[in-house]
Length: 109
Image (cartoon, rainbow, N blue to C red; front, top):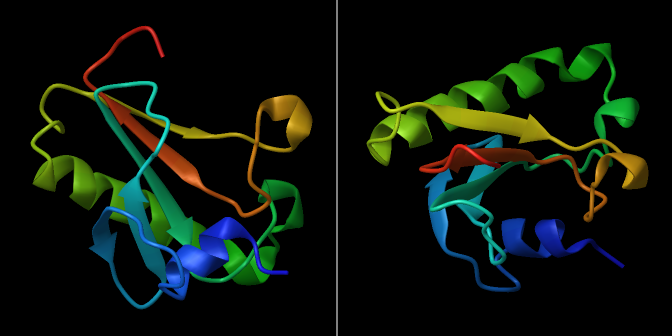
């Protein structure tokens, strides 16, 4: 069974998409912990950072650059924001598909 993020990528379930290109899709988190909380994910299914390899270096950079663009589009780049990747259950990762959290508008997250 495909993970929930793969279903979002395939448009099988709805999401509030704020960015998409050939390699990356980003959407608002359904359980936000900050005023701006966007999940930035690769369209390639990679479970976590532990599972990324040398072939994924460019893709990981594309996640960060997509987050930068989204922060600019959402007009939070000048105020500052946080990028967070949780790794594994012990690191708080809830979905087994690597994702970068873009958090803005709060200092205590």
